[in-house]
Length: 309
Image (cartoon, rainbow, N blue to C red):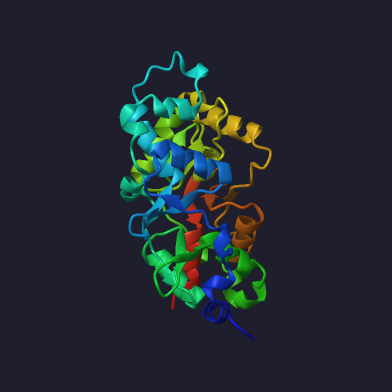
């Protein structure tokens, strides 16, 4: 019977990735507001950036990085008149921000540019994603041109279709595998959303646990919430509490759900894979019986276990 490592080694990266015409590429000359609008219009979290003067890719840009840049510029902005503006008109109020090319802020990206060659195995891609701490890997041809993008989620989804390959590993628990990282980076539900996103950027993570005054986990703030921003009048939400921001995002986007985001130390790896895939989420919080967050299990943590020799 094939093992999970056989599956990873025998599957080519392009077999799990979308076709070339589905990949969104941003011109490095686009301004930051234009790039943000493009990302939110197509509903993606990040995109490769190309320098059209030499047709070379300069890196990846993430919507979270764009918002972090917004935070840096508008942190001290008065909030009294915000209700009359959208996020895009607010961005254009700053001359510096209005003219900032997206190609010059790819160094802010949480997700480093980590391409893999077409024909590479998913196993090799997993090693790149884990070692470089990247969320996704552009797939390039022999000339270095991006033909697709492989995500961690696509790999996890494949594994859920082949649970039998996991064997005994799938039955092991979070505690047995020491799965996840700690301490969990959290924000109080009363913290302003704009400050929570700043903390997310400074911590170089793509998600934060939201806790109440008793340190109980009550929610999750992630890059997915950034993707939900469109040209509606929601910029003011950034200056409300984190819990209010999350609730507003959930209520205004019918495709957004509030998934079960926690598990216990006795949860099995197989169950974690299934929950991550079924709920389209990127992390689970390992909580005590009182719902105090102990560790967070990310997609990368799962991939690290799978490629461990």
